[in-house]
Image (cartoon, rainbow, N blue to C red; front, side, top):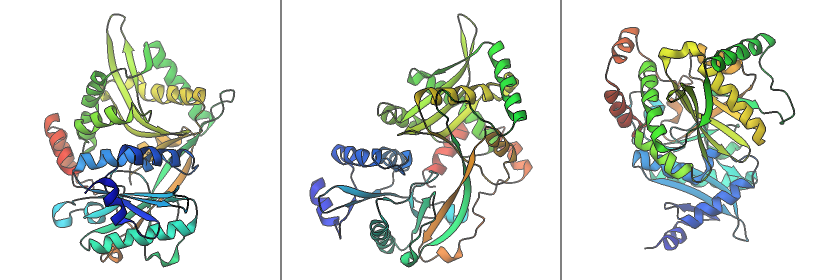
Length: 378
């Protein structure tokens, strides 16, 4: 059965459930997203494909069309295997999610009527998979009373508006600005340079720093195959950057820090960052972020989404706040038999200090393998 035959069979009331994204569909979705001000990088079908490749799980891309056959709504969904014994509640259960390991990617439509139809089709998919929870992650509150969704306030995302090229960057306070500029000068005096990664070798070098950081924070690390997929698929499509802070020693350079960012339309999305924690006194963190903002300003970007902050990560929250940004509420919406049992407290439990100390001593190879196994199921 070919792709078009499959799509025709799954077509219902203007909603197509695509389970194989061919190049033509990807291009059509890309054009729809580029014309929608509310579209984010996370709605892009290439991101859905990469997540599916990472976990080995099937996806559903719900596509709504008007009477002329033009797309007027999309909703990406991906199945997750879940962690055995449901160790971390809803976040580790079997889900049909939009999207796992993603801040938000809920229904994106041109009007509420289309959204209602897409939500109805999504709940039908969940009913066809009763052992799974339907999880819709959104950056807005779904206003559809008959959806049957249980809505929970999740974390907040930190978003900074980027001023025009001729305007001045604004920070949380005068003191915050003074300290940032002081740290940037210190990094410049140490001969630290800002540039973008040129090849996959630099990605592999950055990955070592990333593993060390994930081990320190006891967070499941994404696999190197995941990042290689991002590099090979997203970068050629103009959807990804790896920005670096490099110590220039003349004939030799040393990678100190790097941030992987996704981008779409006029928005930038902070995704993964890592640095040499043993040399944090060189202030490469502020240096890299400041130069990223200058670059975004010069290129005409309108916003930079710094991402979420987990519960009790006060230092990370302070770091993001000092750059002067607004907080955007993220919502998790659930549907399914066990949706009523879901608690407002959905953050992962970090564990005791002893287990954290022990974990920080394991080899980086163990960190990589453990992270790969966990992220295949989350």
